[in-house]
Each structure stands twice: as structure tokens, then as C-alpha cells.
Length: 544
Ligand SMILES: NC(=O)c1ccc[n+]([C@@H]2O[C@H](COP(=O)([O-])OP(=O)(O)OC[C@H]3O[C@@H](n4cnc5c(N)ncnc54)[C@H](O)[C@@H]3O)[C@@H](O)[C@H]2O)c1
Image 1: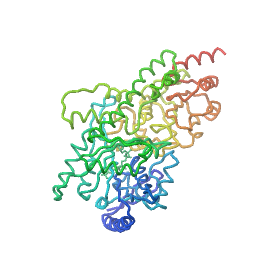
Image 2: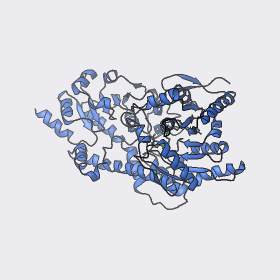
Image 3: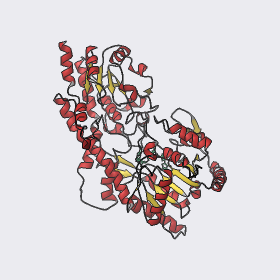
Image 4: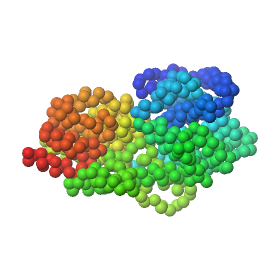
């Protein structure tokens, strides 16, 4: 068999392990674990070192006891898939597999791997045999089959079910299994428990698996680490022992003195809390979509409206919705809940109206940006077809490198459908796999390309990381993500770098009125989501 390589985002190739490597790897780790145990350290295996698992693993590895001594030894465990294997050798060097703006992430991983020596990563499931605690951070997906219709979709928990099966085959009966994955409510008791119990019975283990659930509220970005460590957690366990163990573990590794735990009676309550929490957020964001259109059509600036309302403390969590609500969580979590009601909990009626509608609105919000771009270019006498359109920002939110379900993807797919030539800049994203590998990513048949025409050439999208280079010659510039790099752009410099007046589309309320005015003075056309007052500024500029 020829050697296979997993390629990291910066292009480094790592050979996948060969069958003979597993045994040696496990023997080496076994010895290491023995010496770690002798130091009184608990062994924690974190399954899945993705956006959540990698940082959670480091936080656990950074834990010290009352005397200031490291009290945990953490093994990040990751499938050696072509797409993800590179994360293991990277972590073992002390390099974070996730790119983040939070200055705590890189030094924390470096410190735990190379100085404290409390963190390592591996590909062998056998390490589960050595665990006192297993933290599950693998993904649980929701696959949508139509654009703007979340009901026509289903939960894909294959990775989670596979992980639970493997865990049950390997762990010691008394190991705590903490599911942090966001799951369809009912999963811990009605999916995880039976999978594990059956395997335990086959292994001759009489006790129940010690299963617990505690969902992550991690917010990648500037406060990545603090959003896990210094934040409130909700948890529960399948029985009293599991509950006791999960409370003990979370109290040791998180800052629960300042951010106390909420312990629920049953895992389904913790699971539901996560789904309701995110559906609430998705709903308030979706709610503003119709008011954003209202604002655009009636000379109202939604940015100022929101600012005015937020003065009321009861309404302080209003947020400008942007070109779609991306990220791994908000577009799917409500879907997990609606799906679970029928497929795990067994109800036949349909009680959900708001939750799916919110997701559908958020999923299609980006399409409107195509219209704004078309109109702005038309006002400059240019057809959108064959226009050179630069999209600033690929990530789903500001100052992160995560492109999953980002609003920008929908914007680009719509623009491509309308014939525009697309270029992209993002300081945090090196490869936009949703385009580059759209035939297979995020899975075969799962790309949003299936919902649009004329998508083939988008495979050629490569992200430019130099903003000046990106701007050169653009006919339209879409401010799609409020990355810090885009917040203070000076209109004079932008137009000078572009080399000509351009259509400027503001998707996030980034431009101040002064800047909008200046762009008009420089001969540009400006449009923005929810920014109906732009027309007024345009007319005022024309008069002077
Ligand atoms: N990213 C966020 O902002 C965020 C926030 C809150 C909650 N969550 C939840 O946390 C969970 C994990 O999300 P994520 O963003 O880290 O996902 P991710 O895709 O970045 O990470 C999952 C990792 O698990 C690995 N994996 C899959 N199957 C495996 C197996 N059988 N054995 C070992 N490893 C396996 C994958 O290769 C991947 O590296 C999800 O349920 C998500 O909804 C995420």
C-alpha cells in the first residue's frame, strides 16, 4: 500500500500511521501513563481534538491541585483520517491545531506539551483503556437537504455513535464518560446508554456505564480559553454516581468558584438547555431579518435602531444579524431538537414553528447580498455578470478562522450564480475547504453548491491574505465579516488601492455615516444590509 499523507493547513505533509505503528504507539504511551499516575495525576482522554476538544484538552492539562502541582495528564485522541491526522503531530510539537485570535491558546498548548508535559495526542483508541475520564468532543452533524428548509434534513450522529461504541469496548468500567458534544435531546440516555450498556454486557461488566453530559459554550475568537474555563457550565449524569463524578471533574478543571455549575436532574435537561439556548439566539437574530429589510426600504438605519433599543438593559442582547448566521452551532442545533422530538423521543405531531423558521431565515439571509451587489453595480453602469467582486471575510464571525456554515459562503454561491467573478480575502483563513473541496466537503453530497447553479469554478477559490493585493482592481467590495482588519479602513486609501471607484457593500453595519459619505464623494456606490439611510446620504452628497 502506498503511503498516505494528511496535509495541515500550512501545507505540511504527515504520513498516516501504518498498521504496525499502533502497537508501538500504545506501548510507549502505556509507559508514560504509568509514570504520570505515579505522580498522582489523573488520566483524561479527550476524544476529538477539533475546535472544542483541542482547547478543552489544554485547559484540563493546565489544571493544578491545591499545592499548584499539575493534577491531570491529558491524551488528545483523534482518528487518523486524511483530513484530521495532522492535528496529532502538530499538537505533539506543542502547536495548536486551531488558529485563534485569543493570545492564551498558543502559549497554553505550548506550555502543557513542552514545559508541564501534561498534554499529548495520539491516534490509537487503545489509550481509552488507560483513562480515568473520557471527554467526548466529536461532532454531531445535522445534514440539510434543501436550502431554507431545515425540516428536510436529519441528524448525522455516525461519528458520535462510532466513538461511543469504541469507548465502551475499551474503557475501564469505572471510567467517567463525559459527552460534551451538542446532541439531539435524549441522546445520552436513549442512544449512548444502550450502545455502551450492550458492549459492557458483552464484556461481562455488570455495572452501568458512568455517562454524563455537559455542553460546551465555547466562543472561538478573542476569549476562546476563557469561554471554556471561566464560564458557567450546565451538567448532569445518568445516575447519582455519574453526576457526582462529573461535578467533581468540572469543579477541578474549570473556574467554578467564580462561575458556578448548574447541575440538572437528568442528561436530557442538560441536552435540552443547549438546544434551547442556541435556538433562542438563532431566533432573535432571525427576528431582525424582516426589520433589516424594512429599514432598507424606508430610509432607516438598523444599526442606529438597535443601538437605541439596547439602551434598555432588558434588550441589551440584540445583535445585528449580518449576512447569515454561521458557525457550527446556531445553524444546526435547533434542527437537532426538532429531529429528536420525532426520531428519538417518538412523537408524531409537529409542535415546532419558531425554531425551524428562525434557522430557515438565517440560512437564506445571505442571498439578499447578491441583490444589493447587483443593484450597486448597476447604479455604476456595470452588470454583475463578469464583474470582479472581492469578498472581505470568509469566517463565520469576526476574528476567527472557522468557515463552517459562514454567511459568506451563501453570498458567494449566490453571486457566482449571477455570473460574478469572485475573489476572497481573510486574514485568518488559509484554505476554504467548502469551496476548494466542494465535491467531498463537508461530506459527499453535503455541499451547499447543490442548491445553486454555476458553482463548478468556485473550486478555484484561493484566499488572498494580503489586503492591498486583494483590493487591487475590484469592481465591488463586500464587507462580509467584521474582522478587526476591516473596521477602520479609510475610504481614501481603499479607493486609491483599488485604483478606481467601486461598489461597497456593508453587510455588518461596519461603515460610519462619515465613511459612507466619503465613499460617495470618491465616486463609489454604497449599499448595506439594514441601512436604508444610505440613500439619504447619497442624495445629500450629490447636492453638495
Ligand atoms: N465550535 C464551536 O464553536 C462550538 C461551540 C459550542 C459547542 N460546540 C459543539 O462541540 C462539538 C465539537 O465541535 P467542534 O467544533 O470541536 O468540531 P470539530 O469537527 O472541529 O471537531 C471534532 C473532532 O472529532 C474528531 N472525530 C470524529 N470522529 C472521531 C472518532 N470516532 N474518534 C476520535 N475523534 C473523532 C474529528 O476528526 C474532529 O477533529 C460539537 O457538538 C459542537 O456542536 C462547538
